[in-house]
Length: 418
Image 1 (cartoon, rainbow, N blue to C red):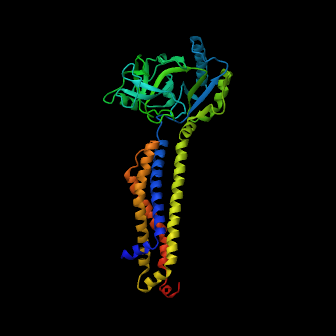
Image 2 (cartoon, rainbow, N blue to C red):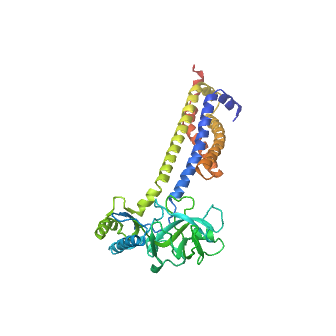
Image 3 (cartoon, rainbow, N blue to C red):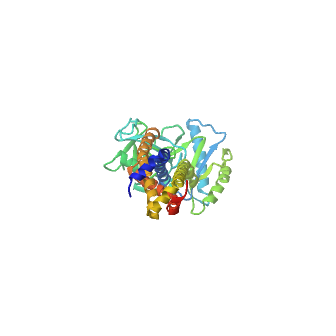
């Protein structure tokens, strides 16, 4: 096929050619970045929390008429109330295990700080060896049974190692359990088991007695979601939270019975419809924004692809109508139907190729802007390659119907006026 007549024809329709090329370029640039964002969001949503999430629910409640003082008598009173709750929950027939906790993976509440191999080093800038930014989980000796996390080294807490402190008091625990990711961060060439760590710039050593395979941080900790520390601590304040593992298949029954059990233990508390929440709901809430973003980006992609395809179909159909007589002449001079079909396919391929080249540069520019302003990862070049192939295939499929109509123009059309 001779290309000169094709490019000569395109020069006579510069406005339409530029419009479609720019539309293809914009579609390629936006769709590549949007699909990359969707992929990242889907990957985030699919991350394992490190827990056995089935049959787990969270109870959050607030005492009424109790002072939140930090003196020993007030802390002891709050601890007694919390221990009464724990005993009542553990005696429920549908409950397997209960632990008090300040938070759980993916929950929208976090306690963060820093740990170090050296005493008094409370600063963490992201690069200092032997230090790490972490999320704390304050739990008791039943936490492993509740969370269902996998212990890969050492042991978990003993009951006599659990301490209780006021809500703002320092955690003067003697032992801790950390995640494997944190262990590798602190001791990349060996085992963290038995190491003395120092939290939040203190000088009191806390010994690592166990290492968990994986345990994710709460939902609002995104930069280092796997650096987690479990401390054998019951926090005592006017607010308390419990993580509960129901017996297999008894989650709904346990959740339904929990408010009545707690009110019977002590009616001076606040429990509302959001106080008892399954871990499935916690996960759903944690990733709601990611899911919404993925759906939004998907809708944008579908709309852009649809508009681009419609533009190619409309413009090619317009050109077929304009060239009706010329197509008839070519047919009369011996051009086959497949020659006419291939002509419009090659014409569209040339336009789409130019648009794809512009779109590639635009996709990279948009990605750099997103990296700078929204901390997005670099767009891999293979994604752009897939996008180029996709828009070229889209263009060829879009032009197929009007090209087939053009190929069916009879030779007699050459004799018609107009």
